[in-house]
Length: 382
Ligand code: SF4
Picture 1 (spheres, helix red, strand yellow):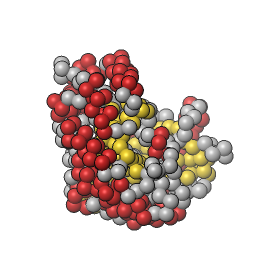
Picture 2: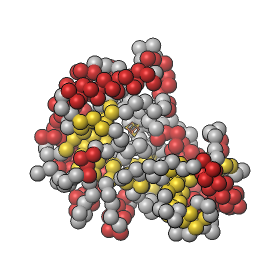
Picture 3: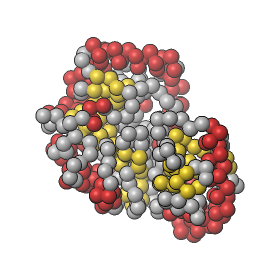
Picture 4: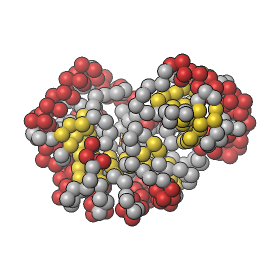
C-alpha cells in the first residue's frame, strides 16, 4: 500500500502546490522513509516536516494525539529553531483535525493482520530529493539486514502505521513492482541532476533482485533516457557483476562497494550476510575491467590494518568516501563485544578515519566526504 495519499489526507485541505503558513508551499509528500512533507518558502528554501507515531518515545517539536511532528532542513542552511517549531505546530494543528478519520480509513484499507514479508507494492512516485542528488529505491527493506543499518528505525514507524508485523530488520522487503515505469515517467517530466540507487533503505542487489530484476530494469530506463543523469549505485552484493555490461553502457555510472575493513573476520561479525571483503574487492576490480567507474565507502571504519585496506582499495578504485560511525542502531551488541568495543569511541573513529584518508592520499586515491564522488557530476571518462 502506498501511504502517500493518506499522508496528504492528514494535511488536507493543504494539497501539493498550496500554502500552509508559516511553512510555505507544500511541494512534496513522501512515505519512503517515514512520512515526510516538504515545504518551500518564497526564497526557495526548503524544510522537511516528518510525522511519526508517538509510540517510539523520541522528542518532537510538536505533537498531536497520535503523531509526533519534527523538522529538518531541506538544504545546506539549517532552519532557525523558532521557525522550525512554528512550522511543526502549524502542521500538527492541521493533522490533529484529520488524524482520526485518516487512521480509520487506513485501518480499513489494510485489513486484518500482517501481510507477507516480501510484499509487492505499487508506488506513485519514486525519485526522492536528497542533498544534491535524488535517490532511487526499487526495493524498501533489505534482506542483507546489517544490524547497524540506519533505515530500520525509520521504516519501522511506517510499517507500524500499515499494521504490519513487527519483524526483525533484515526479514522483510517491499518490492516496488512498477518502479521502472514510474522512473521513466519522472525522468520525462523534469531534469534530474544525479541519481543514487538505494542509499539507505535497501540494497539494489539483495536476493530478491534475482527474482524481480527491478534494479536492472531501472538501469535500462536510465541507459535509454536522452541525456541520462549521472548514476551512483551502492551495494554490498557481488550480484551487481551480472549487470556489469549494462552499467558500463550508462555514460556516467559509478558503482560503490562498502569496504569498512580489510579483515573479513571483522566483516563477518558486523555484516554476517554481506559479501566477504575479498569478494567485494574482486568485484570492484572486475567492474573496473568492464569499464565501470568504481569507488568505495568506508563508513564506519572498523578494526583492521589501515595500510592493508588502503593498498587493497588503491588497486581497484579511484575514490573512497570516508566517514565515522553515526549511531549504532541495532548493532549495540556487536560493539559490546570486547574485541570491538574500542571502535565505537568517537575519538577512535575520528583518528581511524584520518589515518585511512592519509593512507589513501599517499597512494594517490582521492578521499571524499558525503555520499557521491565529486567526479560523478563531471563529464564521462574519455
Ligand atoms: S546492505 Fe545496506 S541497506 Fe541493506 S541492511 Fe546493509 S546497510 Fe542496510
